[in-house]
Length: 133
Image: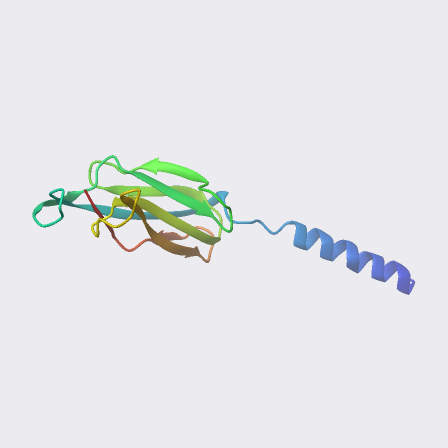
């Protein structure tokens, strides 16, 4: 074989190998799951009325470096959520909470967790998230 042909084969092989690398997102066998707990306060955040699972809350996930959320799901009656069928990579999971400092104009802020799936068929548990209502 000539050097040119060998170089061409190496270039072709490296192109095929690197183009098969999958980015974060759906299509895998892994999952990210966790629990959200509600801390229910009065309007001034001076009196805690109760602590309970955050049922039926929107939870968002961002795949890799995407600029906006990639998927949204809702918690079950126990405040548990799960994003299924993910590939290895970096993810951001977040949920909105009322602003207990009463300083943000919107009245809400995002509770954010960064998560990494390192292997195929991996279930990654996110540390519990607490929100205020």
